[in-house]
Length: 94
Ligand code: FES
Image 1: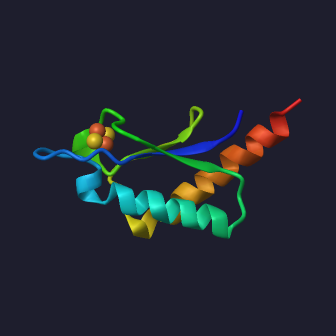
Image 2: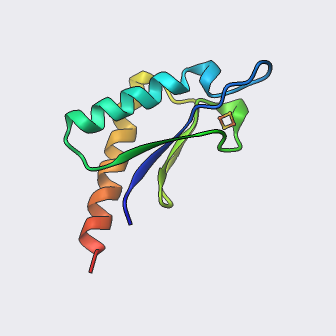
């Protein structure tokens, strides 16, 4: 099963939202870094991970780490977690 970085890019007029705290820029940055490292991992932009007060949020799918209050400074953590998930999935493939 392919590994994907799922990034919330929900925007709300009022109240907390991941787009309002930088989710779109994070999605773009994750995409660029995965491409720069030539990792075959996609980025999927979705509209809520159910933890809006703690955004921007993203997670590694399937079943991987969940990152809350993500910042650009911590982007490397996400890319590394995605890389590890990708390698595990690749090594377990029949
Ligand atoms: S708006 Fe991002 S988790 Fe709900």
